[in-house]
Amino acid sequence: MRSVRDIVKYHSMGLSIRKIHDATGVAKSTVADYIKRFKELGLSIEQIDVLDDDALKLQFFPDVASVVVSRKAMPNFNYIHQELKLRKKTKVTLYLLWEEYKEDNPDGYQYTQFRVYYRRFVKKLNPSMRQTHLAGEKMFVDYSGVTMPIHNQRTGEVEYAQIFIAVLGASGYTFVHATPSQKQEDFIYSHVKCYGFFGGVPRVVVPDNLKSAIISNNKNGIVVNESYADLNRHYGVIVNPARPRKPKDKPKAEQGVQAIQRYILARFRHHKFFSVDELNEAIAELLDRYNNKL
Image 1: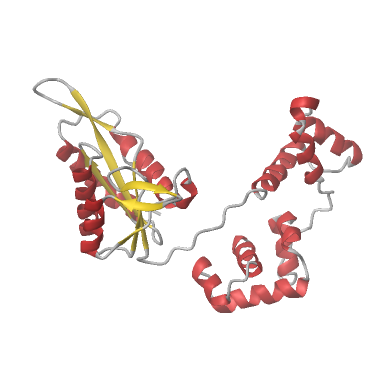
Image 2: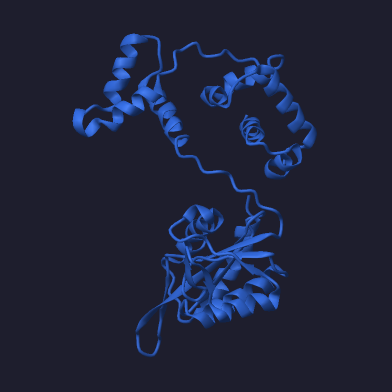
């Protein structure tokens, strides 16, 4: 049903069958069939969104669906949302609104399901368009907020290695590299190692707006660090930085950073490293496992 919802949404946005196929991976013939069924139903996108998966399945595939459509009254979430906007003044709560709903609909949804439907409604108020990634097109790069301690055996001092992470947009294939800092030479070196790891280069690299990559990114235009620009000119790669304060431009990087922190860096929490090279060797042992896991 998730594919049905995505296809209907993209169709309503005016995308062609070919582009919907590229975005969802669903066969073109299946895309065309779902669009045909959607048109025959005569439902709006808003009506589709309100239906749960069982009800939607019954609408699209009545001959194979063996489910009972819920007859429970759907709450008026527009009204509920407006009431909650005034809660600082009125002190109204979602639980109170549910109790009022149940008074009018004794056979209605219980509070847990009521909250689930309300959260779905709120998410649709400020939607983010799904990004379509083509194989080999974009590589997203970022640094992990979690650093790794490196212990100096001679002095006992502790310095913290920075963790560079690069993620390919279409496949999610990931490269991880530890460096002593985020300075320009380390940043560029991580890219060289990254391109070697992938065995090729993307068409576009999407970095964050750190100074090693981007001098400025504002309404007056983008100024790329000259050394970073030289690196990507050498490899024939376009630099297209994420907009400032807009993390939704690079969800792959954000997700990749979080996944690496949980799958690799968390495993080192009781391990003591004495050099960045030693840390990179340990990362390399886990990186293939990470990239190959389902």
